Every structure is written in C-alpha cells, then in structure tokens.
Length: 77
Length: 264
Image 1 (spheres, each protein chain N blue to C red):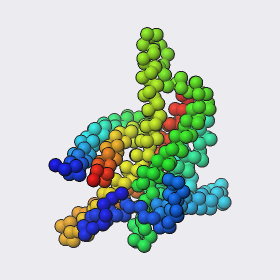
Image 2 (tube, rainbow over the protein chains, first blue to last red; image 1 turned 180 degrees about the horizontal axis):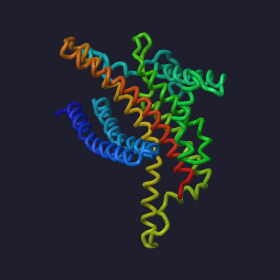
Image 3 (cartoon, each protein chain N blue to C red; image 1 turned 90 degrees about the horizontal axis):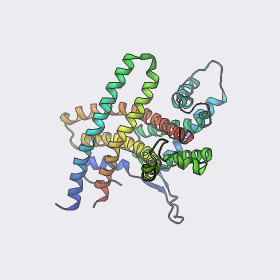
Image 4 (cartoon, each protein chain N blue to C red; image 1 turned 120 degrees about the vertical axis):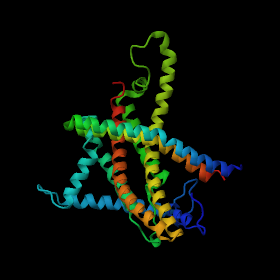
C-alpha cells in the first residue's frame, strides 16, 4: 500500500473511531440535562449553560480528529 | 487546499472551499497582503455588523420596535451570561463578547447564503487562519488579565498545586502541574479555533458533497434523498451558526473568568 492510499484509509477509519467517544459523551450529557431540567425547570437557564459548555468540550474531541483527517487527506501526497 | 476541479462533479462542488486571490499585492516579507474572496467576505460581515448596530444605536427608543428588538435579543443572548459568570467585573467585556458573537454569527450566516460563482462564494469561518485570529485575541485578553491582576508571580502560582499537598510530594507535583497548566493555556485558544473551523467546514463539506452527488448522478433515486438532505442540513447549519457563535463567546467569557479569579 502506498502512502496516499494508507493516509486515506487512516483518515476514514480514524474519523469513524473518533466519533464514538464524543457520541457517547453527548448522549449522556443530553440525557442528564433533560432529566435535570424535568426535575427542576426553574434552573433550566444555568443547566443549559453548563450543557452547552460540556457539549462544546465533547464535540471538540471529534473535531481534533477531523482536522487530523483533513491533514492526512490533503497533505500526504 | 482541496483537490483540483476535475470531471467529477463532487470534486468540482468542493472547489468552493478554495481561497481565490482576487487582487494581487506583492508580498511584504513572509506576509501576503493579497485580497482574496475570504478577506472580502470578512469585510462584508464586518460592515453588516457595524451598519446594523450603528443604525439601531442612532434611534434608540424606550419602547423598542423592529430592528431594536432584534438587537436587544442578540445583546441578551450574547452577553446575558457575562455578569453571571464573571460578576460585576464582567461588564468591561461587554463590547468584546458582543463583537465576537455578532461577527461570527453574521460571517456564518453570510457564508450559508447560496451565491452565484461570479461572487466567489466563501465562508471565512471555514478557514483555520480566520478562527485562529479570533482565538488569539481571546488568548491575549486572558493572559493580559491574568498577569495584570495577579502579577507574574501570583498568576504562575495559581498554576501550581493547591494548598494541603504533603511537603515531600510538592516539588514533583508542582513541576507536573505547571507543565500541564502551561499546555492547557495554549490548548484553550487552539480548541476555540478548531471548534469553530471544524463545525463550519464540516457542515459546508456535507452540503457540498450532497449537491455534488446530486449533479453527478442526475436520477430521481439520488436527487430526491440528497435534495431533502441538503434542505434539512441547511436548516441545521443555521442553528449551528447560532450555537457556534454562542459557544465561542461563552467559552471566551469562561476563559477570561478563570484568569481573573486565578487561584480561587
């Protein structure tokens, strides 16, 4: 296998693997957030802020992998 | 950045993500001052933000109407969490955070509008250089606040171990904590930049690939699902544009807050 082919393969597999963790994380986060809002609707503003911060942090992990995938695809020639 | 446009319609559609230099200006040292379509769209967004707030600020009323209602909703959305997070000291960052929010939002939305090829469509926030520039501003403000409020010694001290660590462990743990915190300070702007860039370019990539497929295989089997998907994805991208602008401003506030209250 030559380098560009290997890089494309790595980008695809790596991107797929990298979405697993953030997917689980965002799922847990959303579940617990809706539970918390259902339990205490008056605190929904604060809960939503914490939710969005957590969402951004979890999502960033997949985006790091996305950037690596882009580098693999377009830099390895 | 992306592959050359070829016979393949998908690849051709992706060429929208290329930066095109429109006006060539000779390089000064390593810096290229040429005017590209990315620069033009950044100027357009800046002008839209400026004109919008200028017009609203010129005719403020006690009972808001029309544009003023939109401006007030944006203001509350962008800066409502400021005093909640930082407290009274946070009022100073009102303008910075509102500018970040409205500029990123307008840039994202302008990039989402489908444009003919003659206008050289481009989304500046889908370029890592633009988002890195925004994140560097946050980094400078954060570090400036940290050093100014606590002094170099006090600020660095807040990166060391918290009180209550046994004496024997303090030296190796201090070294470890210092390195981790130092890296963390540089990862904060990096993640800000990558998050905005990644979200924008990922959305545009998906839409462009689907549109490319639609043109490549012109049959009802592809056109109907791909077309529907593009419509849904466009609506989702408008939502993402808001969320990303909100996250960028919110996280900037959180980072500045940790620098202001370092060591507490």
